[in-house]
Image (cartoon, rainbow, N blue to C red; front, side, top):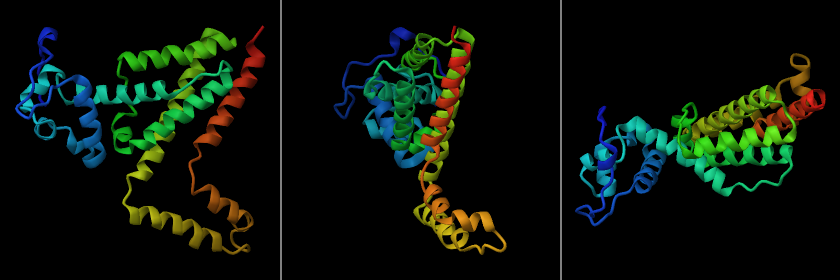
Length: 235
């Protein structure tokens, strides 16, 4: 899509397309998310989206100004899916842990989209709700405002960084992923103790650990540090 601004009052189409589809912002975002999963960034063209929707490509401009506008909507939809599935318990540490794991899992379910959206600030309804929710958890736990904002920043950046890192692994060709797994098992696990004593001593644990995401452990470490900080700053 090129840079093209469409007046707000014109950004809806209620008549069916030639294929009988009634376009909506939600349908376009859902279709874009599916196509990104199949084709990566190459999916974000008006021609490909129009074909998938059975619509004239120009009709998409009634809903999105350009492909970047659509990409922000996709990013916000991923956040919305997390929030719709997540259930708070009322205990701040458990809530942040479950929310972080939920975000990470949802990005792993859409690794191609994760790679395209994890750096973006959408400024849209679901993202705003997530910022409000996380800051609310921290402030209600007793963190002063400056601490709440700092921990929010660390929490979100850590979660999205691991989500993108693990999504990148999932987007590798199958043979490349298998090669990495074999490298830990066949190369590192067989290093001799006289040249690599620490690797040799920890080899079974190392091979098992490097085959899974480090995010749950990193999240627990961050939350433990936040809890220690709370004991220090809370009156």
